[in-house]
Image: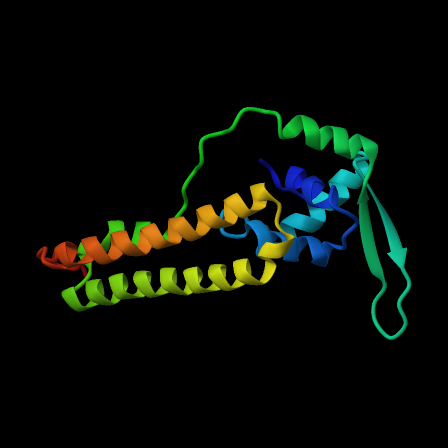
Length: 179
């Protein structure tokens, strides 16, 4: 699913600013789909050009004016059609797994540091996810709750896997590191 479709989904809950949309990405689906302001604002311009959203400028004293976006009926229909399309298999992009993949080229100390860092990062993500879930869960519908529980389960499973497999990786002899 592309950024434009997800933005339409967020706007189907009510009007939002670009900042609000970024916060929605970060605080709701950021674990499995995130977007930067550099992706959000061009998508909003395109959605406006296509007639899927409208915008309204709110005059504010003492701070910059606020632009609120609202989904149109055409946007609602486009969103409805897009979420009916078949699921595309996920593409996993993981900096962590790439670094582990090439981990044999590291010294034993560097390997240990890498695996410890991977576990620590996953624990931090789990802690953040649990805190956000606890804070926002009263507002979730059953589908949103499902996604958050999936995220937490995924992080717990990743941590358990890393903790279980790391000792056997560390027993492997390191390759000589090319200079």
